[in-house]
Length: 457
Image 1 (cartoon, helix red, strand yellow):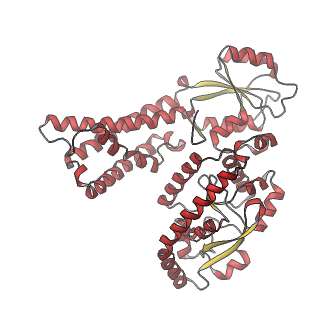
Image 2 (cartoon, helix red, strand yellow; image 1 turned 30 degrees about the vertical axis):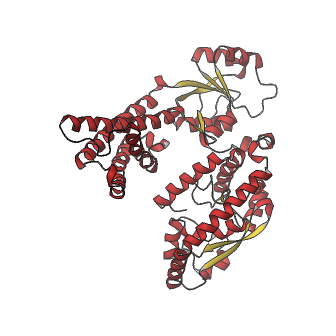
Image 3 (tube, one colour; image 1 turned 135 degrees about the vertical axis):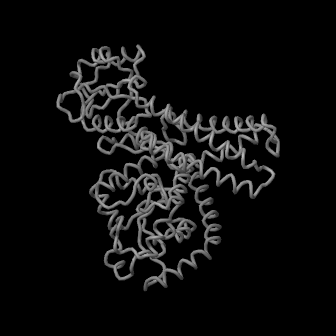
């Protein structure tokens, strides 16, 4: 795993992204060579490698936009190729807009088409090779789980669903030889023999209670022979981007850098939030006025929806939103979380919620200091009190200011059931534990992608 933006990414996926940059760059050079040999002109502004590199990078946001680095897409050749065709079309459209705005960097139509076809073919070939390598067991390293509890079973499922990790679960050594979904390789005392017999390259510690069960001498001996030993909780966090709440220990949060407050950091964040939110609010004010008129024409009731939410340190504040539900049900059931096909949502409201336009007035909350741009999503007082009583560590969400978007928002959809809220909390705690400027930038990029796709929540 490679750590970027305070998030762990599979090394193979990072290598694939770098390969994409090289392939697109090489495809343009190849297209230039083809047309240069035919007697056609090269690029009007010259053949500077730096200039070629800049326009080549236009492809990368398109590849990211169509989720070509997501696990589900990487494991499906047919889906990947379909999205790759969409990437080629979108990249050509983006380049056409670029050339219209800056004619001096324009390519001829023949050169552009040659480049697009060559780049598309090469990107497809690279992904086919990547998929073949990832799915082949011979290219994966064996993993033995030391323990067979809930963490071991969930890790086995998560690793099995992510072939790009290059890991293959061989089984577990533990107490229960009937653990669901896991092949029992022997007892805890058989670890050294199992590793040697199965030729495992990794040991992952997944015991719930390690006191008296850890064969320290065997582990140190295996470590000295080149066997990688990892903590299961940390590996789960790296793979999934969330904390494993069932095995979460207070020390994990107590010593986390993200939970350590900084007066300077808070001050800078507050100033930046105020300035950016104020400017943005002035820019979108005319747009909000138009939406407000449409809301009034669509259904009776006020334009804005105000609701008490829980913020930093458990303090209550008034959240501002554009109304997206019928007013006659907002008072009685407005505190209930919305579902995918909620009848309370108006026609205009469904469109507003799809593109997050109902959240625009929260720029005022950010300017006031009630919220920031990125952080855990605030809920109503009733929901927060109920969930904090039912879910351990839930109140830790209140250690930072809530946000208009966050790590949980870009990974989770509607939050209705208790299980949904547990899932959301596991992402929120991951963000608080690892929060940094880099992680905030990554969340911003993911939020923009969701807005462009218009996914409902």
